[in-house]
Each structure stands twice: as structure tokens, then as C-alpha cells.
Amino acid sequence: MAVSETQLRRRMKQFTETCHRRRLKITHQRTEVFRDLAATEEHPDAEAVYQRVRKRIPAISRDTVYRTLATLEAQGLICRAETYTGALRYDANTEPHHHFVCVECGCVQDFFSNTLNNLPIPRSVGALGTVESAHVQVRGICATCRRLKARKRRTH
Image (cartoon, rainbow, N blue to C red; front, side):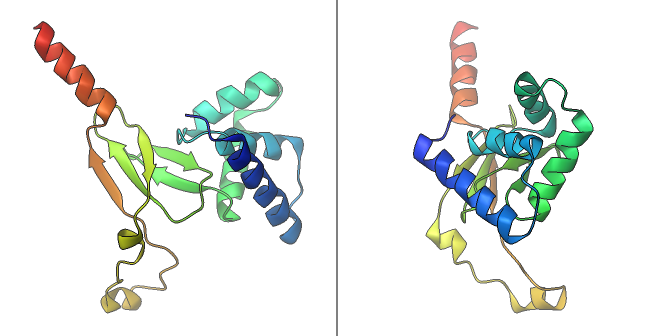
């Protein structure tokens, strides 16, 4: 699902400002990889990003896309979301949010919850290291897969 034009502009502005602040070059390839992620709520994997960006920049390499994704993540411009299979998906939504992961199709969807955002982190975690963020991942069967299963049951 595509994000609104307003949301895309906001994310692109944040990208530009963060790059300037961190003295990170704003290359055409880097911009297009970020734009691909910023324009969707789909949480694509690196290969999907590569295939889509390649349509706009035919000469871009997989290596460039993978390195760019790693750089964008290291700079806090995108986040990684892991599916139940361990596949890495990418997300340009850096606002506090959580993920619903479908155990059937692997889709990842954002959801928001102030209650989950404010979960207290146990003190014992402090002995393990410094917490920079906390994220809740809920797994289940998405509405689309649930409807498909129901249809199959009715036809059999």
C-alpha cells in the first residue's frame, strides 16, 4: 500500500535533513532506494527494493542496494523488520510503532499502540546493555489469508 503524498514528502525531507546533518552524501542511488521504501507501507525485502529501483536506474547493482540499505539503517533512516522466517524486511516508518507479521504469507503491517510504546523495560535488562528502543511483534494470520482459507473451506 502506498503512503500519502504528504507522508512521502515528510519522509523525503527527513532523509535530506538527516543526510545533511550527518554529512552523508545524497546520491541519486541512495535517494531512489530511500524513496522506494518511503513510498510504501509494504516492508519490502532487499531484492524487492532492488527490482523496483532497477526499473528507474537500470545500471544499479544489487550490491549498491544492499550497501545502501545497511547505510540507511545505520543512520536511523530506516528500520529492519524480521518475519517469522527470519527474512529481513525494511521500513521507512521511524515513528514509534509495532508490527503484525502474517505466519501464512509473511506480510508485515504496522500498528500503533501507546500502551505498548510505554511498556516498562525490566531493570534486569539494564545488566544486559543499554536499551535504545523496544518493539513488539505480533504474529498471526492476516485478514487476506484468513479470507482465502475461508473461501477454500467453502469450495471443498
